[in-house]
Length: 183
Image 1: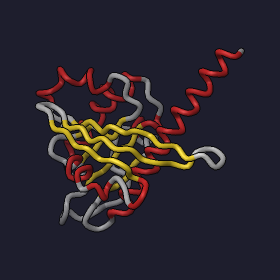
Image 2 (image 1 turned 90 degrees about the horizontal axis):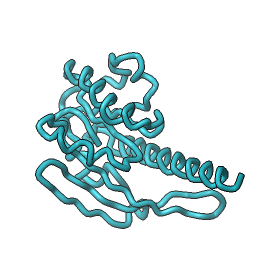
Image 3 (image 1 turned 90 degrees about the vertical axis):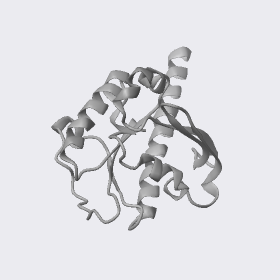
């Protein structure tokens, strides 16, 4: 996860209700390091047929702080998706989203469905659930509004759909790789 400084990722993630409810979450562990906070958990999804898949998830948060820019290559290495958290009420965040997109998404060759823009509304800020005024190329990315005080279930479901997209993308990529070996 990436995004603008002090805009609520850790609040979202550490209030585990953002991530899960009920039996879909098997394990949660949070670790804090000098330049990154890591939240690890396992989540179960319906696979093809009657199979269910358990996937291991690591959310790495560098708090949107440019002083840790030298650590970003480690965050990007082997990443399968990026969530950009920003406050749509702060105009400079709208331009910072472009920077995060360029550094963490386009430079890694990730597909749009491997990305999630999360417009995080702090309590009492008033919520505008419309599309923020972002650069046109960012408008094709999935957008989720988050407000844990008013709608935690919507936030959780939006994040769950995002994780399912990641699992599906990885599964399709693996299938293509296997087919290229066979043919």
